[in-house]
Length: 416
Image 1: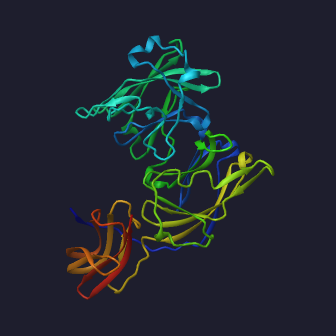
Image 2: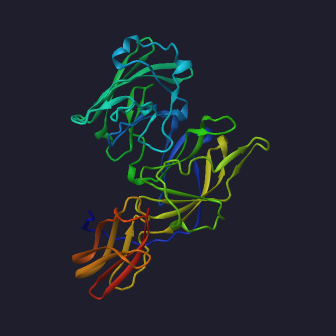
Image 3: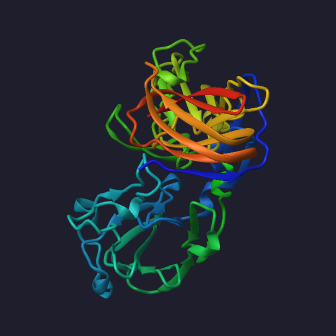
């Protein structure tokens, strides 16, 4: 069913930004992680090495990341939590493969791999659909440093306290420690972080709604010269920040509406550069552009042009605003019409109107002029926001038209 909800909104101002060259530094040896906003620049920088594991703050996937970028290795042991005291590492090297964070999804960390056929298996535990608790059932061996190994388990997640409990110790069971992470403490963040080395739980990332891209070192599958997981320096997207990568085009290509956006967090990734083993120089893909849709719906064009290597960790790119949620076709001096996000991945569209009219009709038309959706708005008074559910419409380009007393305005939207 399609719905529309009117909400009074503050002023939305138009903007226009020319192409800008930006250099983001992850420091020598890529020692820093940098959170970046396309509109506001660098939001926060923190040392990569200060954390070991991280717990997802929202949702029911129970994602737990490992800081494999600094060399941590996670091995799922063939022992249940109930066998904690009898865990040994015989066979680790031969048959316990290292587990890695997903390269495409924040909600599938290194501890969430190796799932069973149980649809509620989260890798480290099992979700209870009645209580919404998660019971830990799997033990892990963690390499914190080349000569530092620990055994680790997640005891569980309690929905009543909104907390994870976890335990770790030396392999022989000595120096056992238990800590908790309360998700409520990290409201508005993607993850809460833990240093097992220091036995600390801490906040280190900016609020989710303040950043678009993360510049960092991470583990990725590299197909050559030998297919393997390998530490790389690159760019990952925030959750719900879609990216369209376009290859085999000139750098002046701007038609972002013709392609498909992806929510895979490594859509920019690392492979816009490669190291030439003959010249010992970094080389760059020169026929690729990226279009990034930020959280409010602006479309930015990015071209990555330089990498300073481990010497300084500098990543250089150009960014240019292609489409702003505040710049739309206006056919009357009395009404402004804005539609975002544009493109929309799920058909959830927000309209912003600025008109005074007892009634107005919103129509969504396909490229042939056929009306695909219509709704009447009542009591429009100045600047207001309305949500449209267009999830039932096929993907494609549409015109959105609003007609009221003495007003007629149209804008375009792209559903993907």
